[in-house]
Length: 126
View (spheres, rainbow, N blue to C red):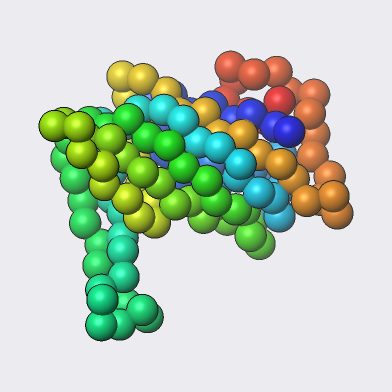
């Protein structure tokens, strides 16, 4: 398992850069934990599973999620805990990480070598 950390950056873009640097193209994202200042997610409208309703929330949230890395790109589904003890869930398009952090735990596919020699805290693979 490899841990990626994001601080003071946009989560999805940072993860895509970090997994490219680590040489990972296929993997399971077994856990995501952290907090964000704002985020964009999408869900499907009830009448058309081929469309996306994309919503941007300009508010802080605790976040958890899972997903995959397919063809070198991150695909995350998340649950965001927001003010009032409410949850907002969907496909994550973007999340601004400033005050806190996000950690993503990745299990590369056996056919995809990973470089575990980069230490944690550098924003790179471990």
